Structures are given as C-alpha cells and as structure tokens.
Image (cartoon, rainbow, N blue to C red; front, side, top):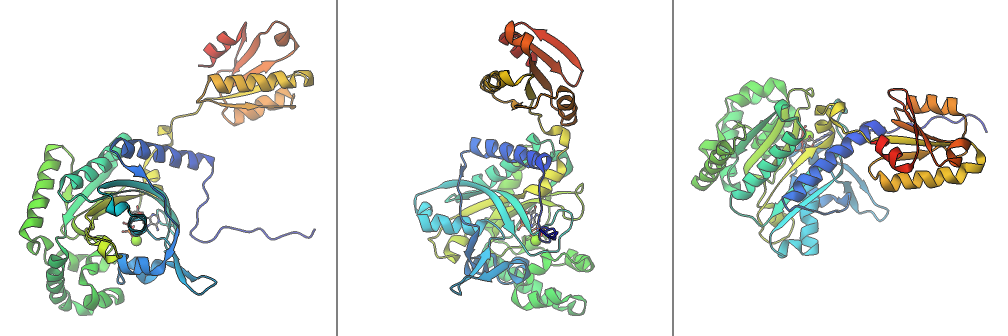
Length: 419
Ligand code: ATP
Ligand code: MG
C-alpha cells in the first residue's frame, strides 16, 4: 500500500483526550446533580433542524443567523441547519410533543452546538452547552431560581470567585420597540462611525448594536439611552424584586444596562456570567426570559426562561487538581496456568471496589516492563499472583507511588490495603 495522506480534523473542531474528557465529564456530572436536585428533567432533541426554526426564533439580524449557521440542503432540497443553540430546538420539541400543553416544565439538556465562527481560545465551531429551561412559570420566583442555580453550580465548582454576574431587564417586546426608536435616533447621530454590521442593524434592529463586539463602538454605546428608562412599570417592579432578593440571598451581581444578549427572543431579565481569567471570550453563561418564543414558533402562549453554559469555557476555569482521581489497580499473573485466576481476581476486585478502575495484564508476564508502564500511567496499585501466592492463597501488593511492597495473607487484607 502506498503511503496515505493523514486526515486531520476540520477547522474549529476539537478533539478531547482522556484527561480533557474527564474534566468535561466531571463538570457535566456536577451540573446534572445540581439541576436534578432542583427538579429539572433531562430531554434530548435533534442536532439537525429545519433552518426556518432558527431564522424565526433567534432572529434574522442576530450574528448567529446572519453569518454563523452551518446550513445545507438535504438530498431532497430541504434546507437544514446544525443547531447553533438549544433553546429554539427544546421549545420546538416541547410544542411538537405536547409537553408545553402539559403544564409547567423544568427541563435540562446538554450537547454539541455548531457555529461558523473564527476559531480562537474559547471559541470553536463545535462546542458544548449545558442548559436548563423552565416553561409555564410567570412570576419572578423562577427568575430567581434560575439565577440561584447558576450561582450554586459555580460555587460548587469553586470557580465563582473568578466570575461576575451581570444582569439587566430589557422589558417587554413593546418596551423594546419604544427603546429601539430611541436608539435609532441616537445612533443615527453617529452614523459615520458605525461599522457595516451596525449600519445594517440601525434600520432593522438597533438593539443589536449594543451587542456589538467592535471595540471602537464601546464609547458610543456607553452613552446610548438607558433601557431602564423605557421599560414598563411592571417590568421595573419585577426587576426590583429580583435585585432585592439577590441582595437578601447574598448573590453578588452587577447591573449592566447595555446587556441585551445576542438573540431576538428575550424579554425582561437577561444575565451573563463573565470571567476575566479566560481571555477575550469571557462569557461563560448566558440566560434570560423569552415569553414570546413559543408563539413565534407556532406554539401556544407560554412563559419561558433559561440559561446556557459554554462547557469548554467553564472548563478553562477549573484547575486539573479539582478533578477527583479514580483509584486504579493493575492485576498481574506471573504464569500462563494462572491466567484465569487473574481474570477472576480482577472481576472480584471490580465488584468489591466499585469506583476503582481495575485492569488485567492478561498474558503479559513481563513484570519489569509492566511496572514501568504502570508507573508511567500513574496507576496506584499492582496486585501480583505467582506460584507462591496461588499455593497459599495470598497476594503481593505494590503501592506504586511509594514503591512499597506488601505480602498479604488473604483477600480481606488485600482490600483493606487498597483503600
Ligand atoms: P459570545 O458573546 O461569546 O459570542 P454568545 O452570546 O454568542 O457568546 P450564547 O448564544 O449566549 O453566546 O451561548 C451561551 C454560551 O455558549 C456562551 O456564553 C459561551 O460560553 C458559549 N459559546 C457560544 N459560542 C461559542 C463558541 N463558538 N465556542 C465556544 N463556546 C461558545
Ligand atoms: Mg456569539
């Protein structure tokens, strides 16, 4: 066979080795435990959806729909899109399956999302989100619950000290229309300084300008009209209630009146958790209320709120040392005639030490090289059975980190010493 050219991964995609995967897995398990304890139930829905779903919900003027979607035609010519986010798909599923008609729902999902973006630290084309969504709750206690869950998760993962919670209220869709007009007047005065994207948004969706990543516009944005002057009394009161409770609960936050989030479907509370220790892609979690989404995609009227965490960005905040170690054992039998004894002992150890990893070296009897490999792989223990051990039903145990060797008379004392 002639030499074949190596096939590499696509641009913006990520491979995770066992160490990286273990970290991700630890975060996912912590997330599951916490959201389950609040009564959120896991759901799954497709990665591929009708393109129209995202156009209608996320919004035509959003970055996502404008330039970030992986869209293609199916064989029959139907246009489909790899999901860039989960909120629309989750709601679509809840409508399709009737969940939305079955009363209040607390739902959670996680998985890959796809956006055609310029790859850099904290930004890739396939990334993962951890999300929760709550449907059918109208009063602000659910807003607080959602905020509390995020706070509690980051606290539990010991990353909260590296993060800041920013909150804002963007009022009802009506309030936003009024505010958009004010913004249009304001930004029109700076037309010359706006970039191409912002100019496009100026006529179609001026609030999106506030979400611009262009550093040159930061100063103009900072002096733009404040949304809090445009929101209704009811929205003001809800926002005040939430802030008051956050104060009482000692959940620290910063108010950012220019936080609008990158998607069209939000109303009232919006929030982001940011960190300045992971580079310029600093938003780890984003969320808010989106009471109009259900109707936008053809469902009944239904209150809704949720958040999404960028798993890879959160993972950047965790130290490797925070990930609990799985204790590991390698079983070695020194003669072919004890092959099955070694196998049985390995099974017994797996049954007894359920959260350990137990490997069996099988027919490999080269103790010296086995030892070398085991130390290199940071395996904690080696259990050796040779002729002597088989005859008097004993075990030789090597503690690899301390280079200690113990002769143990029976299985009970072996287990004791493996702890
Ligand atoms: P950003 O401002 O970084 O573009 P966004 O507003 O587009 O984020 P959301 O749609 O709110 O992001 O998604 C929620 C979270 O998902 C983000 O806060 C971030 O942690 C993560 N995320 C979004 N896009 C990417 C990406 N391309 N790569 C990695 N993580 C991402
Ligand atoms: Mg983005």
